[in-house]
Figure 1: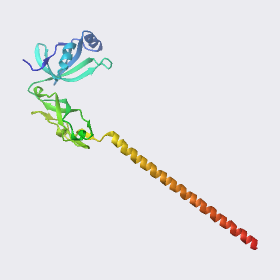
Figure 2 (figure 1 turned 180 degrees about the horizontal axis):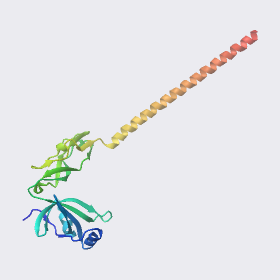
Figure 3 (figure 1 turned 90 degrees about the vertical axis):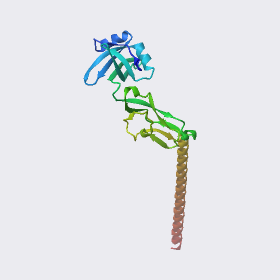
Length: 236
């Protein structure tokens, strides 16, 4: 008995937009199966069967085409922009004993020390590309954040992988970080702005006072000069 969910499919004899619309009216989803080096096969998948299978979280499914059982990998799903219903799905034919590359989700595990101290856990990378056999595809991969402190990062190389699963994504890409709370940063910035404003005010006040002193000195000098002129006139 297969370990994969079975999908009810039929080979589509008609293709194109109108044919796809008619397929959907029959409560089926248009699909395509790609074969390495071979022409793609157009299919229709029972909508109920497909939705049920996708809810299992599996990536590999079993189908029967031309009375032959085969395994397919979900490559792309297209959704209706309004109803969010599946309107098309692409499959890639795979073999149980051959490794394939695909994307899987990354999940954090544990409670970070930095979070306990008030930091914020930010995940920058949600998916990575791995390579493994179809029977060994994990639902997701984990990265342990327990020992993370504030202002630290973990990278792809820190992700735990199941046995016989190879990482394709570059090791030096950041996955998660612990950042300082935004409010504290804003408070520090506000204090700095306030200090700058106070210094600017003091500088402006000081400059104004200097200007007033210079103006007063100029007036005094002018008065002394005028007084001297008057005295000279009287003596003359």
